[in-house]
Length: 376
Image (tube, rainbow, N blue to C red; front, side, top):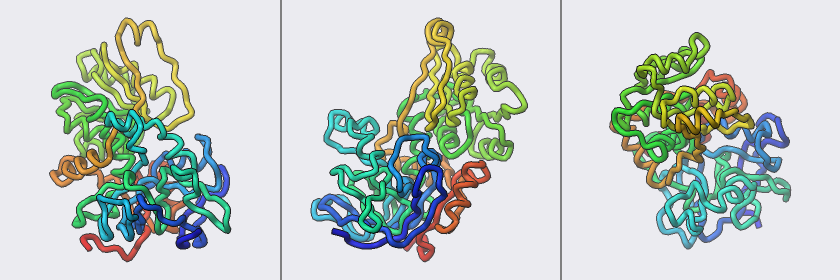
């Protein structure tokens, strides 16, 4: 059975551009579902990775996983939301497996099948077109005018804030900041370098400042992004096109290197540089969605220098805890994520995605409901 038809941006096959269509059929609500009228959605590099086929996924597909909107309906089993609530959407976790019960929803034992299988957790289609399945993303698919999600996908946010700005808190911003605050956990006085000053990298950098790092070093190849990094709190900025970032980082740290590094680029040479720039005993978190590989010197780097290289999914975050924390940092003037954003109309999605790929715009925001007014 079908509840309603919606408008959505569809990728028909690997590598296609987005096609906005108004005949997409949204599945009927289930007892633990929330129906959300979408206000806006960020565009993330993970969306681009799936669009061009860097990960195995079904097509056609509706992407988008940094959504924000207003609750329209709730299922009979929903306890924490009601119509009119403003929400940010994030990934789905089952809440029942061993890892979820340990407080590690990003390590949910069913994470892949629930977020990247293209169907709902009960294996039914989230969306159809002319009766044929259209795959979803993150059990959310925020490049839509209306979607239906599970209660664990949603985080309630204050109604006085501008919903158009908040969607990327559900992925990019919580991934970067969570990698630092939840996983690396630097102590005041330690040092960190962030390679890549996109949305994830800048969030990691701002988190390093919040954590009390005395050196917060931004590395990129684009001067205007490095200038923004300095505005947002980087103590130093390195253009790796103009100087060797490893040598520059060691010069800034008395020859030792940094205690922590975060790579958000997924570029092989840059990931390897993030490891070489570490001090003895340092940790590098490589968190980009990338098909690339790295070559690690297991004797000198991992053994003699006691370095660690780790991966982090979604900043090891618990969205219902971490997103409100980021909002508090934002309200206190400590996490100015909105300085990375630029608004686009929904039908400008291909332009917005191109600007994201080129680096022209750090965080494109699709304004899906143009009638929305902040504070209403």
